[in-house]
Length: 328
Image (cartoon, rainbow, N blue to C red; front, side, top):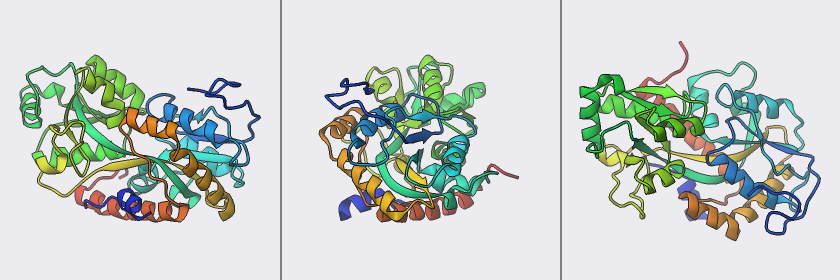
């Protein structure tokens, strides 16, 4: 289960207004990008980096301001794009798990994400960290110490996740089962409110994107107990891996990418993919990756579709092992 299709594919192959974004011209927009969580977190600066730089290389012109439709764990955004025209003017930005893990856990009444969308391109690849915040005593500095603290203070045995049925939720379930730990998930509507509660001490622990926790980790406000990556992070070699702590080959990752309605012509899918690939190879995107500890993987639309299909198959196996479901 340590396969990461995005890594293998890699081996194979400021908001804008007028002239305000490094000289990019003002332009009329006829298309929109929809996102199913609140504004903020990684998604907003990612969109602010990518969308203005698609100008001139993709038609229709996309609004540089992403449209946020939070609610029901991406379902509102899914429905908006699914019901819109399949001409490339309605784009979905979503975490890959919404199309690979979530379909195994629940059925959306108005849209089947597996059939409704075609993958275009992964914009960034993400990993998770299990962090504890100021609600946990400073002396707690390891997973085993944290689990002992939870055993002594069971009322504090909660960890935040950015939504039910997310990869972060699954990470916590695997940890709880493997360590026989009495910890329970508290679901938030996205990473932004979770990070607020974790940083303030309102939530003792959380499974969050590494990119979301970087600043808190640098200031020592947040203490990472492990990452879900397949190898230790070069900038934090002392942070253990979940697979090391659990003696397992499991790794957990996510991508944030573009998707179009399934009926969109292949030429339009490839046009958006090519335009986005150019952005991902830009100096500005390299700076974004460095600042957020993310990685961009410019691959073709068919390669991304194959990776999504493989990821969906992988999560099916994991959910069966963990008996993870949101229904019945």
